[in-house]
Image (cartoon, rainbow, N blue to C red; front, top):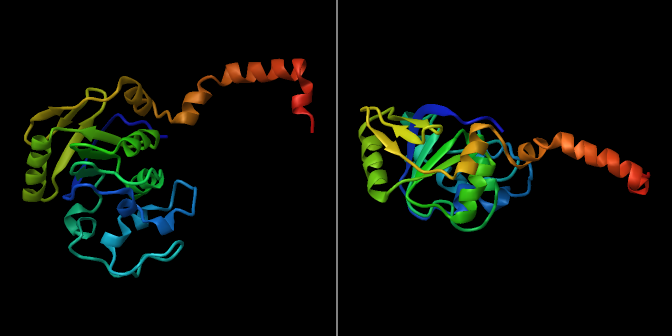
Length: 213
């Protein structure tokens, strides 16, 4: 997992409440357990005019021009601005996989579904909870200013706006540590690699039958 320190990027506004995980990545795409390849089908039913199928070529599919991710001004966005209860519904980890594969590193919302919130951190996405009035203000600024960008500073836990104002946000210290150091569950385990190897070598001597065959 890549380290998350500080980034500046265009903001895409997802002006809908209660966006569930089936909208983020529809159920027909859940057959794969790889973390990559889901970006082209992110918000598939909202993004395209036709019905998407797994392993199909998306390049020639008809787009819904009014959908936010299809608008030229939001191309290349890495920050998704959302409304309350983002990521509700099923617990599918494919939802943050799809967001990350598309290019989103940050999601800002007044609230998130708990499982989705936790899955974001495990997959290198920073979910930021802000007061609803603050989110309302950000939506207004994004809509009013093409190319609107925010700077997300995880180390100092603040968002810097184009006008020089800053917004503080809270992150659990352990999750912050993991993102700053690029540590997912596997990375955390590998921090104890020497101890694991020592235990294995000891066990090979005391219980060799466990390693037979």
